[in-house]
Length: 199
Image (cartoon, rainbow, N blue to C red):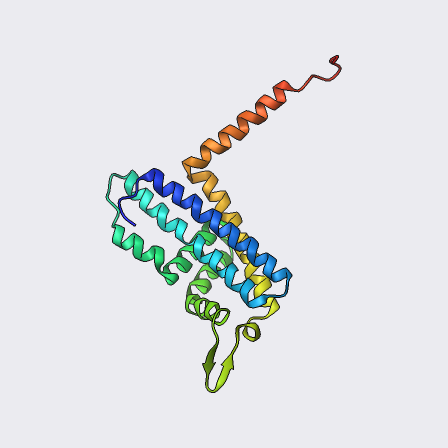
């Protein structure tokens, strides 16, 4: 990944979002069919995939300032599980949580989520692979509960919703889509017959 234009970065953001959305929908299907460990896994993949978007937005910001992004660093973060999880935590803190200036519960959530990055990654591995710990065999279907999967699938959806909001605000490709939708709605309203008009 190097020398991407601003337009290519915006297109990549949308492709990442579309893939994350598909992962969440597939996770939901697996959850509905009792496949809890795999539902958890795909929902976690959705969460990680969404973490790529703020990394790409950072490169866009550098291009807009006339700077050349450090493409090696961008690529490293784009493929790092920990960087993607941290990036997604930050995004959800900004766009998914209600600001709480009195009790700082939003900031507490972020600090707690960032402390749990290692644990989050470990649990994703438990949902994926058979392992052994102190003579005990760890099997994904036994390590991930229905509650674990339900919570992760729901959280992935909330993260998607936060990204949909931020993408509409910051991705110029979506501006055109939204403008076309608005124009179509306006045309539909002006083409509607007025009440009492004869047909």
